[in-house]
Length: 292
Image (cartoon, rainbow, N blue to C red; front, top):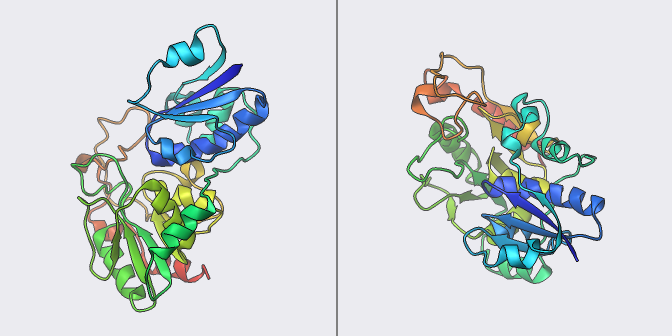
């Protein structure tokens, strides 16, 4: 028996992108059983290209079971440190494939919920209005409640919530330690539940984080706001990608190494005079309204 082993370091969004890589690997090595090692193994559940999805920290006897005296192809390099990623002119999935000399044909992420999961979560969503799914803050350092480099500024989020609160049930995806907004339903759930919420939603305003990858995997066009990162590298053409306004202040970049900004939003790198300068709220609203 031959195994192909893919290690994915990073957050849930990166794991979702890795599902596209799984599809490419399986096409290239159809007779090999693909094992994925990651920090978010539930992302790969029910994926027909994946033989086993294993969670970091819970792996035992891996060498004996899958490496020793076995035929194994190992893909464990991180695309974030590949030279092609540094140029920021290709999508991460393409960089990932080319790094391993795998053919890339614009493969998209894929997620798989079975019908029982969907029905179960749908029964538990008891709302009297269409769902407006909102993600304002990404993951990362739990000590940092807001990243200027990725998150939606609070004033912008509040303006948008107030604009749509009468017509939609605004479901706000957030960690329990992150800012909560009035006139929203807080959604702190498992990844599988969040996938279902994404499928059940009618409109979506997202940031460069996990849920925009979920939406792309389910072929659900969404509005996605971008600040420091580029949709060319991490985004999808299916979405309406709203770029932040041009920088208004000179950032201090002494700690920048491979990329210009720390996605956690280091205070000294703040490239605006105030958070109100980052986005044009009306531009975001217009983009949302154009998604019927």
